[in-house]
Every structure is written in C-alpha cells, then in structure tokens.
Image (cartoon, rainbow, N blue to C red; front, side):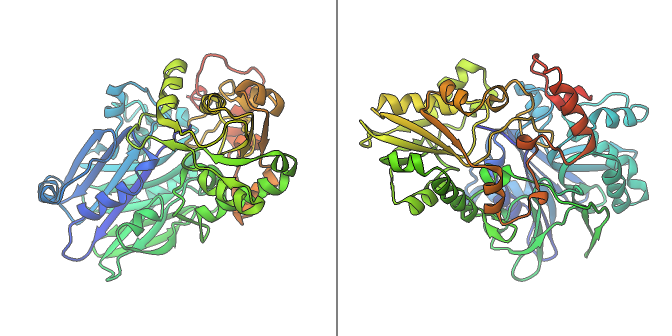
Amino acid sequence: MLKEKCGVFSVVSAGSSDAFVPLYWGLVAQNHRGHESYGFLTYSEGLKRYVDLGLVPRIEREEILRWQMLLPGKRGIAHVRYGTSGKRDVYSHLRDAQPMVVSQGRSKMGIAFNGNLVNIGWLRGALASKVPKTRATSDTELLCRYLASKANGGTMEAIGSCMEEIEGAYSVVGLRSNGELFAFRDPLGIRPLCLGRSKDGSITAVSSETVGLDINSFSLIGEVEPGEAIVFTGESMERSRVARCPRRALCGFELSYFSRPDSIINGRPVYKTREEFGRNLGRRYQEYVRRADVIVSIPETAEDAAYGLHEETGLRWERTLRRHRFVTHRAFILESEDRRVTIDRKINIADGGLRGKKVIVVEDSIVRGDTTKTIISKLRERGAEEVYMFVTFPRITHPCFYGIDMATFTELIGFMHDEAEIAEQIGADAVCYQPLEDFVRATGMRGEDLCMACVTGKYPTELAQRIADGVKSRVNQDGTRVYELEA
C-alpha cells in the first residue's frame, strides 16, 4: 500500500452561501487521498484556520452552525494529508498539517499543497537570509514562504516565479489575508487539479479530483491546465498560463491507484481505464487464464480491473477478499512486523470455495511486497492450490520524487528482484505485470503525457534524473528518501 500527498479543495462564493459546507463535503469526497491530517482555512476580515489529525470528522446537521462560526467567510481552502516529506511522529504530523499559514510583514498567506518538491535544498537556501528558522519539517512551509516573499509584485507574478524556479509536482490552492484566493498547477501537470462551478454560477471551486465537485453537485468546467494559475480578486477571476512545457507528465499512479474510480481524468471515468487494465491482462497472459479456476481481487482499487478481466475471460470473479471498513490504519507508515499485523487486520478472506482452486489475484501494484505476501499466505490457508498475481501497474524499479512515498531504491521489491524472484519472495506461483505499452494504451493518453519514471527511470525533471542516476550507482541503504539527499 502507498501513500500520496495529498488532496486539496477551494471555494469562492459570490452568493449568500458561506464557504464551509461545500469545503467540508469537497474534502470528505477526497479523504482517500490523506488520512494523517485535515484542515480548513477561510477568509472573513482575516484568516481563520482549523487543523486536526486523522480522518475528516463526521459533522451532524446541528453542528454545522458552530463550524460556520469557527470558520466564517465566503472563500476558503481545505486539505487532507499524507506526508511524503518531513518527520513522521504524531507531533510533526500536527505541526505540518495543512493549510499552512505564514506571515510576511503585515500580511499572511496560507496554502494547501498536493505534490512534492525536488530542489528543496535550493529553496531552503534561497530563503535562508529572509527566514533563518522555519517552524515545520515539510516542504509546504518553504513553498508558502517563497510565494509570500514574492507576492509584493502580485500573486500571479509570485506564481510565475515559483514555476520558473521550483522543480517538482505541485497542485496548490492558497488564500491571502486580503481575501485573494489562488490556485495553480506545476508546468508538467504531474498531480491532478480541476475547476468547477455550482449550477447557479454563484460558487466556483478547485479540486484535486472531480468527485470533490460531484458531491457538491457542481459542474466540471475542466482541468486547471499544467502551468496555469487562477486568481480570484473581489468578484473577478483571472486565468493565465504563466508557464508552458513541451510535454505533460500526469502521474500514472493516479489512474491505477490513487484517484477514486468515479473521478474523471482525461475526459474518462477512472474505473473505465481500470477495467481495460484487466482486459489487457486477460489477453496478455492466456496461459494462466486457461489454468485458473477463479479470479479474486485485492480491495478496493483492483476491483474494476478484476471486473474487466472477468469480462474478457469469462472466469468467475469471486469477491472473497474484503476490507474491514473501519480499520483505517495505513500499513506503509509502520515498521515491518507492525505492517504485517495491520495488513492482516485490514483484509479478511471469507471461505469462498477456494480450496483446491487455482486463483488469479488482481492487484493494482506491488511496491514493497508486504501486503501481497500477507494476502497470498492467507489465501493458501484457505486452501488455494496455486496463486497467480495479475498486476495492473508495471514493475516498479525506481523511486518517486513527486509525491508518492516510495522514495528509496532498496525498499522496492521490483528494483531488487525480477518477476520470478518476486513470485518466490511473496509466495506466488507467478507474477504477471501489465506491460508498459499495454498500460499506456489503456489510458487513452500518449506515453509522453504520463510520468512513468518509477517504471522506466526516465524522470520528467532534470534534478530528479540527476539525483536518481547518482543514487542508483551507489544504492543508499540508510532509508533516506532520495529527494532528501539534495536537501
């Protein structure tokens, strides 16, 4: 299992409605993007902030008025977080919770950020003379201080400077103490960001995923384009493409794992793409299809692919693997033994007639192999005779610099081992990855419009490529995230 930083949402209301209610629901719809912390920042004669740890809470109808008094105003931003930079203790999680607010002279600025910065060392150095000591341990504060330091020339100009000088993935929503709200996306469009509006036109929203719009019954206007900035000042909205890049590089993991299946990416529901992943696997690995008796899927992101595989092959899809809905602990942030126990608690396998059967297990990805190994062991206990892993995402061999927490070579089972060795390591009879060319074709996008660096080792930004090449030649063993070596 992976974690990704994070989900963002913003609201500008030009009517009678306050921002909090649509902000809250937009965040609830994207809680899958972050379980560590959540937060809100609104504007009403100044900035009002609230952050806390864990899932976005359930708010009863009678509590709404209290929250609106706590977070008043007709514009605001919100955030759910998994940390991919900074420390991982509980105190740091709360200290680094977003939206994060910084002061610049007499003004303040807050941002909510999805992504990860690569040239964090340069950024820290650039701010050293202006901000000798920072409060937080994540890259978000540095990004916010950088923007605030450039904002005297105007918000649009500050965003333009950011895009010229900062390397990495960043989809950002922000709010200034003068009430100006802004949103922007890095020049490669690595992380998703979209724009929507209420049916009566009174509310405009920016969201990491379209489901944040859907839950509010907002209409999708379209993507915030790579390199585009949007600034809301008073009643006006200004859109500008402040940076252009000859290519796009949407993270392929959004399509395989992170985005909700009912979100729209590239004009198409994500679940449709995942169904095609399953069909591809069925066509590609007919030898194992002919031998298999049944399909099972690891919930929840592999289920659409399992349905596609079922349609393609006619094999029975047995949904005997079930996730315990209220066990929300994330295995990837734990030590090895705790991770195994947590996985064991999260996934239950019913006695679904697997005894003596040859089973295809559909999974979205294999990163470290811990989850997969535990589940295969449980399937064997239930009597499965043979287990073939069908994996929708190609074999991961390189770390990520752009917001997914797979940041060292040695933690990646696909870097350390080939397919046969991986099968032995996790206890499978075969591991069948979807080839890269099949994956790209199923997305309906061009290969050059996707970031697949974790598979190919070809990074869309220069510094990331240089660091990865240097680290790979001496493979770090100390657990340091590769992008933190630059810092």
